[in-house]
Image 1: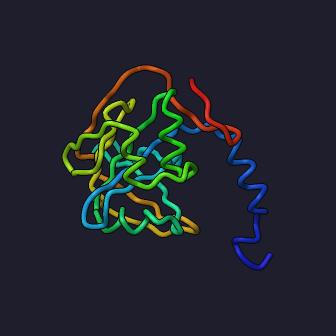
Image 2: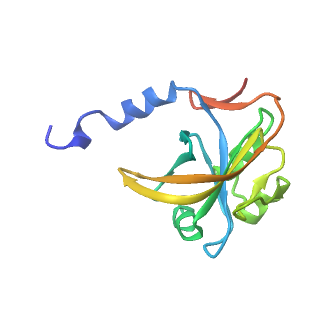
Image 3: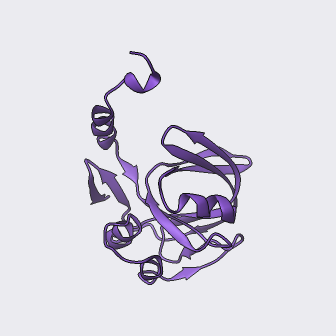
Length: 165
């Protein structure tokens, strides 16, 4: 094993990661870099004082540069019945970005990033730091506003499939 990338077979790593349950989010941004979004499960809190979250965005994603240029993003946690939004923002439907946004009703809070009105929770963030790590950019955001939605079922991803819990 010559490099760190030789430690674990990538296919085996992806298979093992598919066994972890994760909430599904649509992460959005808007500004000079354009309005766009993506489906993400690699989202977590970092700190509550100050409130900081992170989201991992593939460096090859067409949205990556827009998030960095706009300097803000909103993490919208999906309800169990919002698989259509997850599929659309994952790029699996062939819809353009404006068509994807047409699937939901959106507002803005502090940063101007699109906030999904029907989300279980939304975290409106100002981008504070980016760390390039492996295949992804880790975006850190200071939460400037929060919107809490219903307690209905949540959409999660497990074993390469969506589930409602």
